[in-house]
Image 1 (cartoon, rainbow, N blue to C red):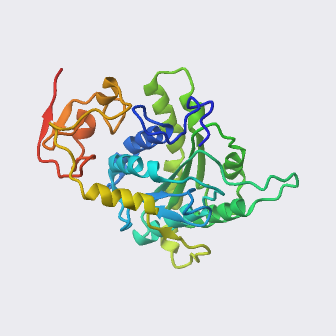
Image 2 (cartoon, rainbow, N blue to C red):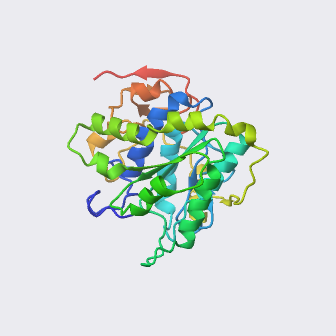
Image 3 (cartoon, rainbow, N blue to C red):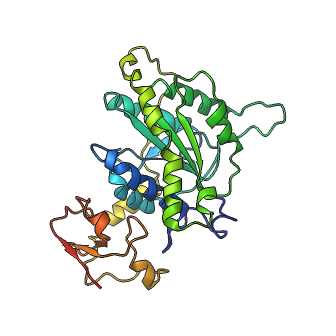
Length: 318
């Protein structure tokens, strides 16, 4: 959670009026990829907490259902994070095997695994070049994933260091195709450019290799019988504190528009920003009383906050 230099000494998972780096990365990549997602279903997993360590991941929902669109990814992320106990060591192998399983379950459709993390894989901290068990497992998983129609984009947020990620990006041998791309989110977003230009630069850096990788996977889907899985996913339900929060929230209906008040720690300006893209002003209301910007609201089928189907959209003009 190292944001000493890049995020004003705050936790990179801080949930308040201003979007944290995780929320920013999810929003930018989500807005970029959503036009290309046929079913708008996104399997989401958490890792690196006290329940998963380096051996498993947890699904965002108890029934393992995917999120419907990146808007729900953002909403669910905000619900989960306050109830996690983060813990090492870190390995990306369980997450990669979960993505491989998603590819298999979709009849070998092409997928992009986006890993957003504030730390690299746990290293051995030796001078003889030996790899840690977590590094070995992650490299093996990346190599195995290259036999599937799956691209892996690793987004590094926070202060780093990221030397091991550059090694994974450039030096992993014996792959069916170059399936791993590392992007330093902090470096791109700390430039002096306008925010829109920084967001565009990040989206380009994260996804620039996707077209060539997609082309490289076109022959792989016909080799599915030849693929022999070495690793297997271990997918857990959300941690107990998250489930307790879900159960408590389910027992209380969402507040009505007339009774809703400004959240603690949020300014009036924060309340006017769209909760989906985190940049545009709120200028569209739904029949439930929740608001987004018109760009995000026009593509939603359910309210991202209370999940009721949208039956009415009203443009707001100041």
